[in-house]
Each structure stands twice: as structure tokens, then as C-alpha cells.
Length: 424
Image 1 (cartoon, rainbow, N blue to C red):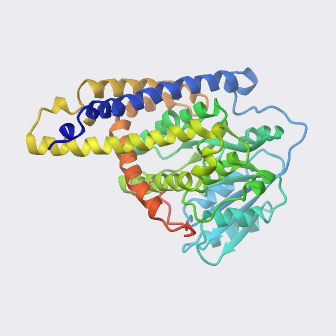
Image 2: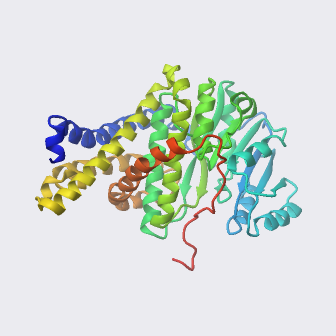
Image 3: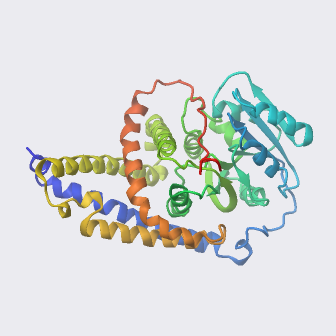
């Protein structure tokens, strides 16, 4: 018996959901991001990244940099931090049992820069433990967590700190920009961080919620971290975990698009798969652990509902792809009857909607990333590559999260920071 015959009337509902969900969410994200733009980005004194508003006082900031096997990138990241224009900050780098020269490079840099302190872990403890250790060794009121490949804009701290003038703000996430652009995957990810990640953060922030801060660049109020219990060692995505813990504790979490952070991303399908699988597993792990607390707080339901629908869509898409491939192979049906494979009118509609979404998002970020509009050409390939990877990782991640033993520490693996010049 075929799948349409088995599902009967539900088959049409399944096809409609797979088609209409991404289109509906695309328009919701576009509307929400435009609302955010007019409320928070359009004012003249906020339009320039290089000229943040003057302050009467600058609270002390501690920048926490967990590192594991980052000898190729950590020197550039630390030296970039030393060029920040913010007047009062320190840097605490955590060498988390690296097997390469990361620790030695950090010690060399500490001898040159008085602002830098280095912590050495004897063994790999995981990013959350590194952040918690560093947080206990500083008296700064604001803690900024970044990755060891991140290069911050000179005024990044200015834009982050201004939000903490509001007592209810517990965390602020910045705006990561991809700098690995030598391959098609790299260029597509440049657009993704605008058309998907940046757009969603703007839209969610327009209703005063976020699914996650960016682990590569986020600032936290120390008292908020203390109340939330700091970072949890067994979560694969410590950024998703701390976001929900803060919002469950009643703290406001914000997005600041002018706090720019230039990062490296995977440029191979294998590296991209491993990264997205970790993201998907970590997100599912957090939601499964906190679903009861979230259910008791209706304010958080919109983001929770969006996440649950995205999980359902990924499973439905996976089911349809599996069925259509089997149908094509076994019954040799007409290709035009397989809209789920991005063919026919359904694929045209999805592609057109996504191109409009990409254009809106790239336009919103054009002030922060010069030449960004040239990436639009590459975004036509995003649904073909990234939706397939995203849906597959979600299908694999949910059982992984369910079967993962509680309390198992989330230790590091060697990060994929894209291709080296010799590999390109």
C-alpha cells in the first residue's frame, strides 16, 4: 500500500503543511524583522556602527574566550580584542586541555598584553565549564562570551553594554558575520546569517523573545547568570540553554545588530553536517529538559510553538522525500508529481518566497556588511542544500537528545573553521 493510500485525506494535509509552513514563517519573519528595524534600527543616531552614542560611565566588562585546539585562530582573535575602543575591559582566555599549541600561544600573548589572563585546564572539560570558571574569576558586572575564532568590531562592546542600562535586561546577543567566503558553501552561509538567523532574531525580538543568543558573541549581566545558575555542563548548545534559563527566570534577552562579530564557518559538507547536528541535538535537548517550566509560562509559548512546528515540518519533509524517492525508483512516476523535491509549481513558489525573504534580510544588514547584496545570487541554492541538511539533522537529533544520558558532560571536539588557504 502506498503512503497516500495509507494516509487517505491526511495526505493532502501533509503536502499542504510541508509547502505552507515555510512560506507562512517566511512572511512572519519578514514582517517581524521590518517591525524591529523601524523600532530599533532606523533612528539616525543608531544607524552607524562606527559612532555609538556617548556614555557618561563605562561599566567594567570581562571577555571570556574558551579555547580548544585553536592554534590557527586564537592569536588573531586575542590581538583583535586588544584593539577594542571600549575603555574598561579585561580578557580571560580558557585553554580547555588543548592538544596543540593553543596554551603556549595564549601564554605568549599574556606576556605582551596586561589585559589578558589565561586559565589552563588539564583536561577537556567543555565550553560551559570554561565559561563558568572564568566567570568566577572576575569582578566585572558584564560578561561577554566569544569563540576563539571571533574578531570583534572595535565598537562591539559599546553597542552591547548600552542595553544593560535597563535593569530587566539579562543578556544581549550580537550580530555574527561570516568571513569564510572562498567557496559556495561559505557564500551561502554569509546570506544565511542574514536571511535566516538575523531575520529570525529580529522577528523574535519584536515580540520580546529569543530562541537563542549566539554563542560566538553574547553579553550577560552577572546577577542574571547567578540567578539562572550559570551555564549547564551537560548541554551540547550552551547558548540555547542559557537563553531559556534566563527567560524562564524572568530576564529580558535582546538582539543588537550593530554589535558585529566576524567568524569562521565550515566550508565542507562534512563539517557543516557535524555543526548542524550538534545545534539540532542541543536545541532538542534543552526543550525536552525545560518543556514543563516553559509550559507554565505562556509568555514563552510563541517561540516554543515555532520550534515544535519546525520539528514537525522536518519530519514531514523527511517522510515525503523518502516516499517520493522510492516512488520515482519503483514506479517511475512523472517528476512533476514530486513537488517536495523542489520541482514544479511548488518549488517555484518556495524559491520565489525565499528570494524575497533573502532580499529583505540582506537589505536590513547592508549597513553592517559591505557588498552583502552580491551574495543574493548564491541564496537561490540555500533551500536545496541547507533545507535538506537541516531537516535531516533534526530527524537524527531528536532521538539523539532523547537517548543522551542526563549529566553527560558536553566536551569539545576540534572545531571546523573552514578551509585553509592551502586547501582552497
